[in-house]
Image 1 (cartoon, helix red, strand yellow):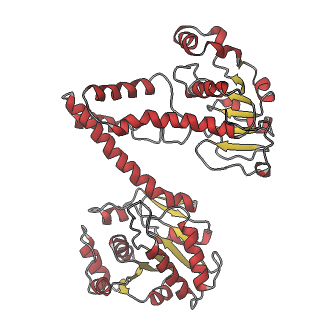
Image 2: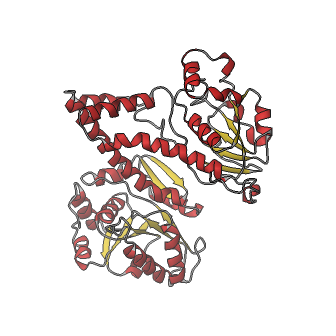
Image 3: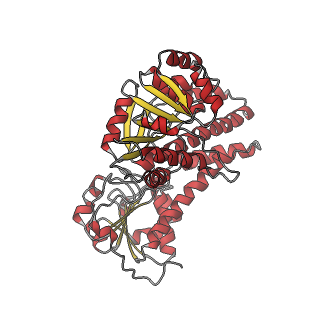
Length: 457
């Protein structure tokens, strides 16, 4: 396959050398004649393990060349990668001048080219950039996206020092596209690369690099804060974190990594508070660990705000315990939401088959009598009654009996705190607490007739 790569910096040079190793013919493009000269001499533009031999071999085999001529590169390739820099301003905004300039150059070159062309964004950009680049290319070329060309997002996940290895041995290859022809072509390009090939939504692909790197930063800071606490206690922090990482079921796993409602239960609030208290007792500053509870409280407030924005007074809460399959009300985050809504004058009806207040004993009873003794007046064991007498239904856990809620009770307003359904085709209004609209039904677009003058109390 013939490809062109715009930008012979760190990402572009590694990509060019590795694609040539995979058997593709690569044309590197850069405004710097020095960088172009280095590539054409068989030398890399960066210092990186294994890159020297790859560039030298690719050049000797005639699989790699470089130029300053954008038109030549586009005319001689099927796919053009954009791998130019996107530096940050002092405020954290990205400078996209370079990437937009390259998009314009590619568009100009496409004026004279026949055949379908793929533009792949390798640079790190925020969601929405792909669409802007497509518009720039359309205006510059006079051609139509998805008819004459398309733009895909193909972020890189390379570490300096191991970039060549990372390129050739990734955990996955990610391509964001809405064009099946482009996806098929990208699969062909990466067919000899191990790891799963994932085709996804364009904005999802654009978002991933930021999420990955922010999480990597979070891991480093969390490990350092744990280390500082352990040091004060004369505990071997490396042994602690080594054992922590051996748990692949919970600690290093997809578990808990799903946007949704706040955490609760008897363990997470209690134990995270104990660790914060321990750090404070030893005068150790742990801002990341300290921020966990604050962030959790914000998610509860988000839930209250979403419910209030609906402008309906009658609210049905489906699930009171902190998760499905239990009657544990201790530190259940929905209890705090209920308390807030009651204080603001909303009419509440609560359904939870696991929570029968008349039969509760022990710790749960002590908790209820101490904090929410009045709650018994709002809890029912009849789901139909709660639903029929409520305008807004708040789903708080994934009980099996809620699975057919959408088909049985059309026309309601659903607030989903747990992503109870992967996809929604509901004849009513649906909103998730931490994800965009997934309701494909036309009823979603109808206006909600509010029965409250306002939701500010």
